[in-house]
Length: 579
Image 1: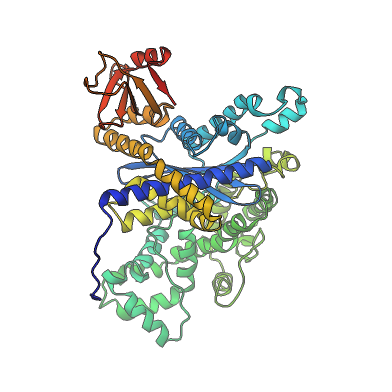
Image 2 (image 1 turned 90 degrees about the horizontal axis):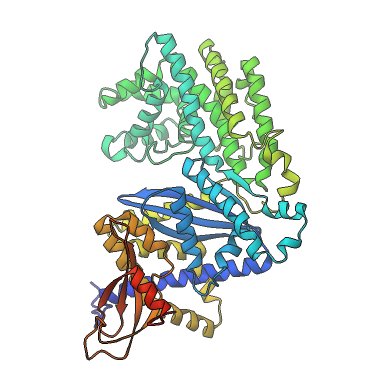
């Protein structure tokens, strides 16, 4: 197009090698950062999360240091999502970092003083495994551990588990909607209904008036100029699909604010857009309006402030203060429901109040006198919310574990965040890569994610030139091992053998170099040299549980499979020397 012709381009194999070398570079950066933090004696908060992308299951790990630095430790493909698999994958990822000593993982785990995750059962089990492992290895790696007093040992082994408060907000949605559905079913006299009508309205407005559905329904193209013509300062309606945390409450407050404008618009254009007829019917329903008001107050007074506090608090133990304030406010609302509608948040509101941000939304909610249906809904929502928040904040409330130990654990949990947003963002970037490049191989996706999240290229650029060259040389030298890992992953995916995937991923032998003394009984030809070199390509177990070791030779790129028993005997007799 611009008259330029390339005389040569990289071959596909070169591009693959560059991607694998980049993965080694990213891991070198991780090892350097962790070593520095360990030398400084910083404590870590370990974060983890898992997801499924297409047919692949992925696990991510990271740490927040005491100074607030986040390090993504890895993005690993796993066979299944059990807690034991997650821990084994973490151990393999950290232990195999470049230049990591044999006890690196143990020292790392002793410095992990807390965890942050969602409250899924696998994550709870994973956190317990981490805590038990720390107690097991601490005597091995902590200097003069036996000379420590019982109190010092207790302080060293003290461990805290925190759960993401964004998931707390997300799960709260179900609690509120369930209460509203029960009220609506009781008033309608029905025994079965899929969802509350207010949720149907919220999803419909988001679908018809939002950006995501604008191309299909062509309603936004009418709504936007109509609002400008009427001098209406409109709020956008975010997509209901793809927003998992606070979206129901955010949309509810905006639909409530624009309800009169939406009614006028639907009456004017329902003959052109027949889907607006159902929306108009829902908007005119007084029960739905009352429920919209309750959901809007939840956004402005509960979930919105909780979200902002979780992302902006100086310390996660600040939750002890604002969780108690929230509980006290909800108790008042159960006895005096009108307190729910006075517009005063029970917790510190960090959102800037301005005519273009939350002021208009909150004012429209407060200005409408609550109906009897609204007061009844607020009472039931307050009661169910009180039960829910007492349960999820139990460790932060008076008498709870974190509340009692706040002074003792404040320093060691200084880097612990209140949300698992860092892990979520890793998967967010991974999703972006998978959506824009659907044929991208997993290890390339992992390398790109680690480079992006850990700012590896900036770190590399600030190093002296000789150090840069040394790191890049090491990355190129590691290609054979990384190619081996890649081949194993592809073969095991094709064979659909998750058991082999787990064994190979966690076996210490895989990828190690060896020298084999040949003899007349050797599988090699008579022209083979006296000693043959290569690397251990695979360790797997067949369906009967018998283990085999596959050796890959460097001289002719052939492989030889032998029983694990024979391999161990050869190592013992020094016919095979493993490095």
